[in-house]
Image (cartoon, rainbow, N blue to C red; front, side, top):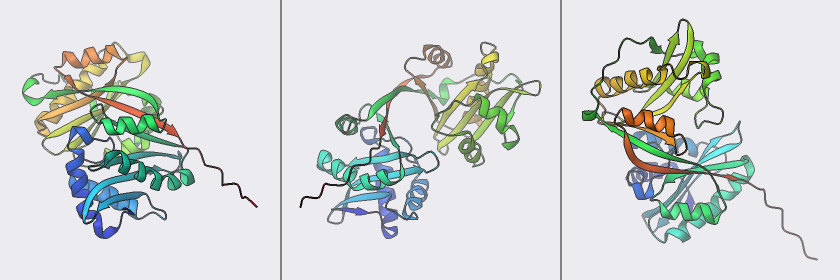
Length: 296
């Protein structure tokens, strides 16, 4: 049975999702990692006027989930799932059918991303004609492999006062907007760092805590075009890795790189990063279905 997510079920569903997303076979991007954060994330979906999260039940057992993470201004959503543990193909299809009306009402496009070992979701994306728009390698660096020290580079935290400069460097279409990145960076364990050439912002890096004292992720590292090749990216990486391993006490830090971006990948590998996973990212244009024709 597929039901809309209810507040009374938030705790068991969030715990189930935490177990599921910790398994590479079921990993889906954009779902929080910490159980408390997952609870808060899906609780927000229950506060909207229309259903934005659906749970598949087999009696009292949770066997599937699909959430719709909305970005209403852009008319885009990110899919949290679909997940399934029994009759995967059938349950994923039914979850998608339940979510379709909400998708058609509010969005022009839906995004989905998962590891390459999530074969059920890759098959789902192909079957429903999602467009593969990006393939990224996830690289990993373990704490014991990092021995460098920052060399006093002109690096400092960024805040709203640098928004315009930051926005000019931040890539259009990134999975966090500039405003989202600034907002998230105010949370404990998240760091938005800028490299300065005099008073001008030459580049930035955003480091996010995924699991406290375990996993950090470098979500973005970007350098102004006129500053590229001057060591800005390397300095930002050294500073952020030192901060992550020594202040946040991460066991490992990850970073993603597009398959075609060999230059960036070579730089990361010089720091000791190694390939860990490959993420496939899909986009689907949402087409409103015409009403059925009436037969007289």
